[in-house]
Image 1 (cartoon, protein in one colour):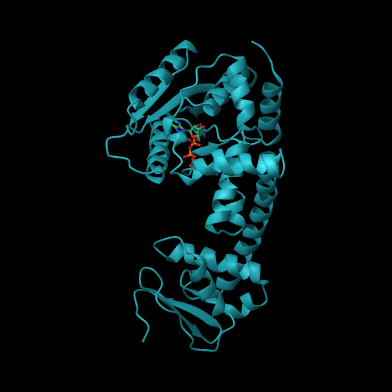
Image 2 (tube, rainbow, N blue to C red):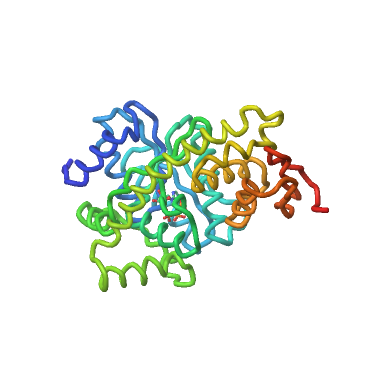
Length: 330
Ligand SMILES: Nc1ncnc2c1ncn2[C@@H]1O[C@H](COP(=O)(O)OP(=O)(O)OP(=O)(O)O)[C@@H](O)[C@H]1O
């Protein structure tokens, strides 16, 4: 086996960041594209050092003419590498990137649950991170959207999604595949410029590289890394304030003390409010929802909001902000 600087880097990253413990069963999500091929080759090459048991999973979305051939291609690679292979094939029609992604994570989780894998590994790179940050920035987001792709994310209580390639760029994975003659399956939908993701990848980032900074991808990915630590810290502080504000509440899910929150900085107030709304609303709270409820922290007694999604309204009752589910404003 040839040991390259990329092998050394991934081995070090996994150790330094405690991403994957030794002796675990790992399920590597392989699309057949350059990133996940690079990922699985690197992990297979270092697996003996970590005593992992590695399997490959592929999800066939059935949304391209060559989807089935793509799945067989990955299956054949798994055979060549003497690695267990798991396939999930979509039965319902998948017609958008978001539906595809949701179904894929469900499919991977199901394979992991049935076959007892606690870790699902994907080939997201620093380039994906830069794209995600730009994509979210353009759509409008707080720091949480800009932290773009974390190293680890729980999918269930005992299954963790891990992304070990977040410091490696797409040009590095392409070079690696070329060096090792890995047969990349080209995804034709990546060429479709109707998707804003693809325009960011193929037009915006190259423009920024040529006209602003050749290192723009890595630099934006590093910004995401810095923000990730800051977001984690702020979320922890906000959690503490949320507990404080509900500590003496007769109904902690629906009633919290605004006098306590008045002492918190605005950034923390907004985060506490978002945490509260996330627990109450049927959909993710947006900017307006958070601002509306944050406004009640300093509003006069008996102020109230318009209904939130699901119909609940919030009312100020002296020191408290109380949620009344399914009620319309008078
Ligand atoms: N069909 C597939 N089967 C198995 N794994 C896949 C498949 N498609 C993508 N993946 C995994 O997901 C990683 C990211 O893929 P890609 O960037 O195409 O998806 P994405 O939709 O942008 O991802 P996400 O929304 O999860 O950030 C790949 O490196 C691979 O590990």
